[in-house]
Length: 173
Image (cartoon, rainbow, N blue to C red; front, side):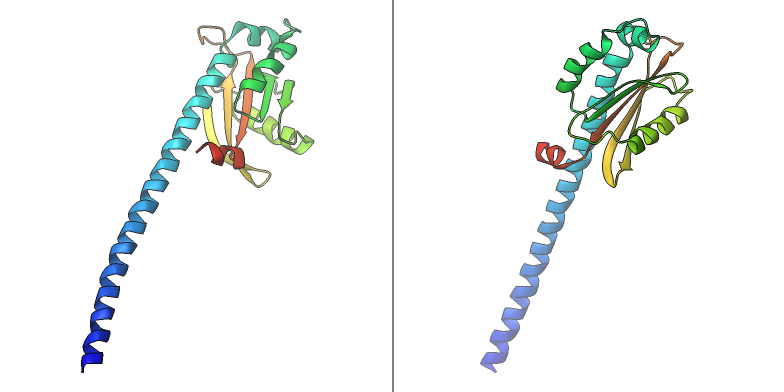
């Protein structure tokens, strides 16, 4: 009888503790999910602002119109400071005028994928940020029209950036 009471008491305490621990773990997991969602949204906003800085720039516009040959050298320095792995610029026909990458493979398949995204956004007059999977890896894809310094149409081309959600990104969280 004493053993039955002790066993029952242990079982009740275990059940109460388990429920409390389970609720605590669920709350912790929900906080982590919310934190990741907020971090992803903040990163999307930062990428959008960065692309606006470079796509709404008369230097970029002149390059896409083939009037600024020094742009590639200038962008190489700027690109190294940006938190992206791939940057591509094209004219309105979708012909790539500039491509640069770091810590990523700029394969013909990747360029073809980016070219198809460029074609699908040909009529867009705003920056688009999408979360995609490319080469079996999640990434932010940012597509921006190349406009003048005031962001006025008409567009002369597009800029595309990729930010892989790789281990470096996870470490920043």
